[in-house]
Image 1 (cartoon, rainbow, N blue to C red):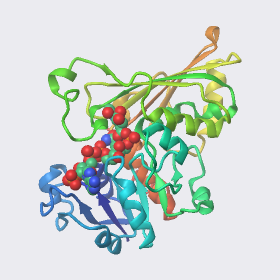
Image 2: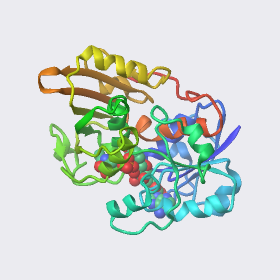
Image 3: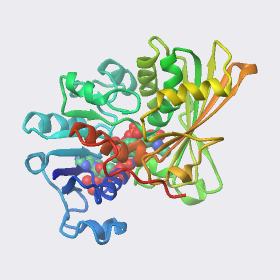
Image 4: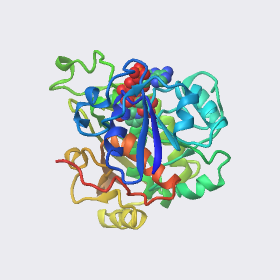
Length: 344
Ligand SMILES: NC(=O)C1=CN([C@@H]2O[C@H](COP(=O)(O)OP(=O)(O)OC[C@H]3O[C@@H](n4cnc5c(N)ncnc54)[C@H](OP(=O)(O)O)[C@@H]3O)[C@@H](O)[C@H]2O)C=CC1
Ligand SMILES: CC(=O)N[C@@H](CCC(=O)OP(=O)(O)O)C(=O)O
């Protein structure tokens, strides 16, 4: 069995890792850290896990302690915290790391531009959306084959929505309009997450300058070199989970819906977690699952293609994709422990 540790196991992404790994046939979670909940039983906090992890408690483990216990460590801590932890884990142990934060997603220069401060540990990780790049091959060729930067939730849904057209090289302009459930903001309550403010409402934010824009541009330009005409506006909606992205894609040439469907079918052939749907996808159908559902409709008169993508932000947008990436790192089947449908 692969021994796994989760740093930040009390948060939403950490909780989701615990839920998904509870039934993974090749993984045993041996360590779950929390600074504030140390000493508490896992299921006394994450009460959906009653019956699982009967012997596991939250611990405030040092990096030294956790790295001796684990073959793989998931970092489910806020941005800025991972870059304090990763160097020590990588340098003094053989464990593999999947970092769910944004710390290692951007190339160093872009990171410094986006966050406005120098990176404390400018080593490069493998940025891994497995449906878009060959993660196993990239790990083999990487200077840091034990470090994966797990993609952001919005960039996952957005990149999957346009990757086949980007690879074809036909993008002129792309506008992403994304709607996220409130767990995307983490488990600390805020004015936005306060029930009377969010219920029966939809709240746009960071209209032109969300930090995920840099990540989207970086990944899309790897598919269509030189392309950077990307706009992104996020919103929160009164739902716990899910991200629906509507991508307005403008192209030079006119496309019919049939043409575009053919391009997507070919690109996503043998990519089990991406499913093309008739009409529009539903957040409910991907809820709790590692699937991304994609809908396609072309509007030839305006050279516009509207792609809709639905993911669960905590699964394909975070912890499920992290486990998919761990499976690839350990040479397991990509779908192991993740092959179940959503909960409509
Ligand atoms: N929520 C989502 O949909 C997604 C989240 N992510 C990323 O995953 C990471 C975790 O997100 P999420 O679970 O939502 O966040 P939460 O705020 O819900 O949880 C983060 C957890 O990290 C622990 N923590 C905080 N600071 C530190 C630190 N300096 N050292 C060690 N542990 C720390 C906290 O536990 P304690 O204080 O008890 O130690 C806390 O429970 C973030 O980087 C986030 O951006 C990525 C994609 C989607
Ligand atoms: C709704 C909400 O607030 N979402 C978060 C993004 C989700 C997240 O956790 O960011 P990463 O994927 O980069 O880790 C935000 O807009 O900052």
